[in-house]
Amino acid sequence: MSEVKARNRSVSKLEVYHNALKMNRDIVEWLLRDFGNRETVYEVKVNNGVIERLPRNIAKDIETILRFDPRIDPRSLNMSPTKSGYRIEFEVSEECGEEVTRIGISRKFLPEYIRFRQTRIMRLLARMLSRISKANSIYPSRIEDANMPLEYVTRTHSDELADRRRLQSMAIGDCEALVTELEVCVNTIPVKPSQTEQFIEMADYEIRLLKGWRKSTNAMAKRIKKADAELKERIDKAKKKG
Image (cartoon, rainbow, N blue to C red; front, side, top):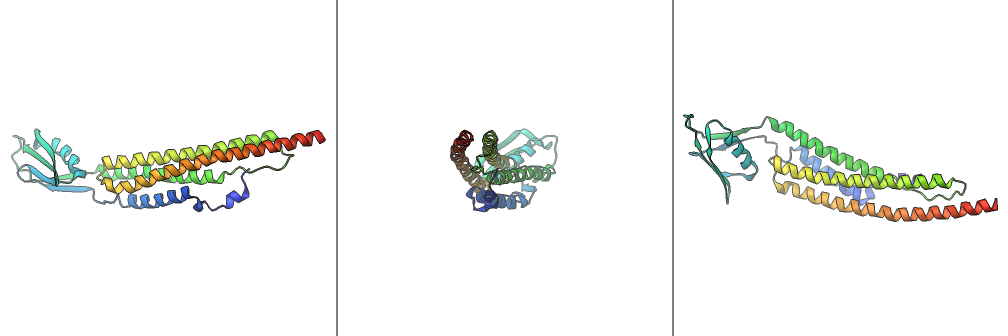
């Protein structure tokens, strides 16, 4: 029941799709650079049981490693924020006779975990774009043929409008899930919050666009309902004449 014109319309002119496409391009580029940081191994210097100016994005990870390091007394571990980052103090356990001068993060899990998060985000982006494109292709047309069974016309229109709105709602859900995924990345991967701020802003804007687009479907439904009522009148007149 979709108009041929709807198939030929350039979806790129639709702002909601254009923004989604730009967001997909920018985020995928960021993902392919391993969230803007290819390093997966860190090493920090220790000076007499003290680590100074520890970057915020790895401070918690270092603290966790120190807590489970058999050379270190976990009861002595103390981490505090400073103007230049974080400071960690600790004491070597009595069983350890060596001085701890360096702490490294050997994150064998990290590449695999990064791939996992990248895959989730890419799938969300691809699914959202697909649903926007499919929803845009569903454009119920006005039926002028009074010989067309009215029940078929109204049922088809109802199904098309429902499918269009359902796809729009699912695209909104994908975009909201994307925001959550970006927030998870900040909390679990050495990613600066500033790196994801622009993407979250783009996603929030996309959600507003999608909701506005979905609202326009309500106006479309009113026009179609009016057209179906007019078709019913023509069918009734044709039956009376017949």
